[in-house]
Picture 1 (spheres, rainbow over the protein chains, first blue to last red):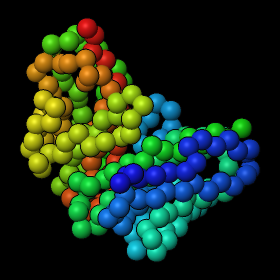
Picture 2: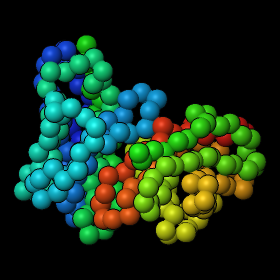
Picture 3: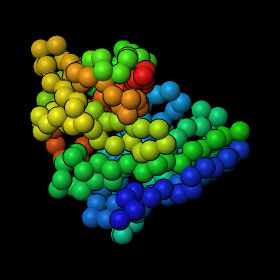
Picture 4: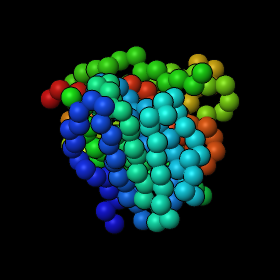
Length: 114
Length: 110
């Protein structure tokens, strides 16, 4: 089991562009959460998807949107990129019935906005 | 507001010395507390959670509701303990969002 897989690993975008990040959860997990980790900071919760719906959302603008597919994989979309969106984006998966014990993190996508 | 505070950005101790990483939280309900660790070039991973009351890799953490603290301790530091440590909390329910502190970098000197 490869665990949580994220793609791409690195990405450079220009201010104003749009970006899509992808995440495949760990086998057996059905819940996907996305986090933004700025340099020197802890991960900040963006949103969580379960049963193809956004279940919880953190304090992020509507420019950040997501999607979950029937196979539980997920995408994070960011529109109108700002320089401040440069960060490491982490995906974490868990099993709905397994509480928070089963949170497994991916290695992240490093987004640089220039 | 829910918040996790880790007052030390960097903690440097000698091998064999005791380690204590501080964590304080603010939460109105009954939170579940965690410590996550990230070793160099590895993914963020769960170290321990308060409800399991386990000792993992020699680390323990006791939840003090009166002081709203969840400090991580180890009596004798080892070089392999060098890593980034994050204290985190979530609502005590299934698969809730996790709120992280800003992290403490632990450096063990030989």
